[in-house]
Length: 283
Ligand code: AMP
Ligand code: MN
Ligand code: MN
Ligand code: MN
Image: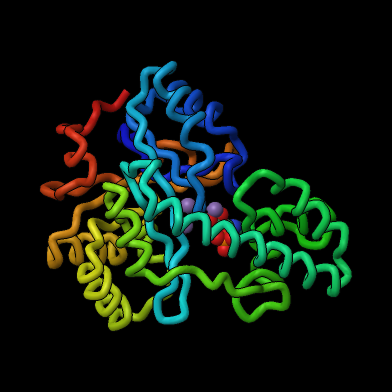
């Protein structure tokens, strides 16, 4: 474990732990620097910041923004954002409206497919949170429709499947601009999860850098050597910083908080920007 985790979710979106419980877990695992990056919402950040100071953690306020690029959804992490910045608040208010409308549309589709119980369950479990497909996936599992979340995504929730509804998210360059306007760093989350061809990935890097993107996340923790090379190579070529995060959603078999890829030598890292000079020691 490395000591910085700049990608994690709470009950403010599709995580299982409250913002406070997340900070408590970071402290319990000896993780000194932690960000909260819920999907398209800042609502968990105040509680997390308060808890982080109680547990003496260095807290980085963040958000994971859903964005459109050439018809695909990409995730852009905003790290070290000013949570009072009007441009960001405006953009996220709009995203929240889109998420709510999409949630209702997904629920409607599931009902028509004969899964009213799952639709109702998802609406209940996401109340007060930034609603997302993970809530529907969990409800489909709980109501016995699919064996696990992976199957729920595969059969119903992915693009091309019967309960998929497009988000209508803001454009990539607008997302980056809103995050920069809030004094944050804009980091492309899990760059290898978008199934891009090499050509498309290179094009994305050009566009991302032109938009003002700051860095790339070196994640998830288990990257192949080739994937690692692609990310590290793009960072060097475009002078992008690297970020590390687990994309923790809750206790379980995958992606424990603080579990990240290990950092190659001589990389510029996003946390230097906040005066965190050296990597905190392993604990
Ligand atoms: P949304 O932003 O509402 O489209 O949901 C994206 C979230 O769904 C991701 O952050 C993950 O938490 C979850 N997710 C996406 N694909 C899968 C999958 N195949 N299995 C489990 N969870 C997934
Ligand atoms: Mn998620
Ligand atoms: Mn993501
Ligand atoms: Mn995430």
